[in-house]
Image (tube, rainbow, N blue to C red; front, side):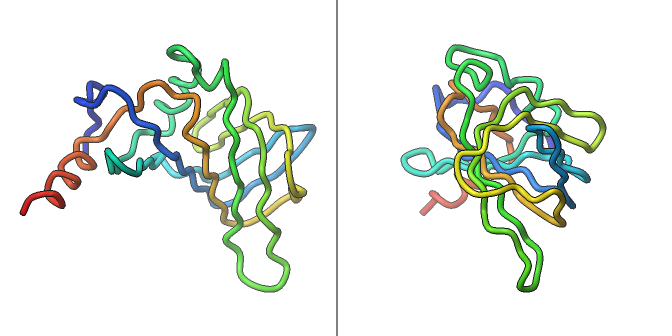
Length: 151
């Protein structure tokens, strides 16, 4: 699968999703371990675009453009995917300064709601779309959307 960084769409507001095998927290940071290679995104009406970009590209583009995430840090929700009675509740955070090293992604965070656990198993991070002026669209996502719209 390839990425297309020159979409035919002027602007989309996409929700981004990052998944990892686990996380730890320390000194105002969240560290995602075993991060998935791709960051998924999707946009609702009117575009209805679905796609992905590498997590490296997502981090590298953090500060690009007017109203970038570096200028206007996004809100995000950490959702825990563990089974059992001890699953932590979702936590709402503001993300700052992503640092990717292999498959380990660290964000500085400001907690808005909830309590981050010291460590956790599988989890996902849902990142608010506001703040990214243009989102790269994968060829696969655009083609899937076109197929769905064909009569």
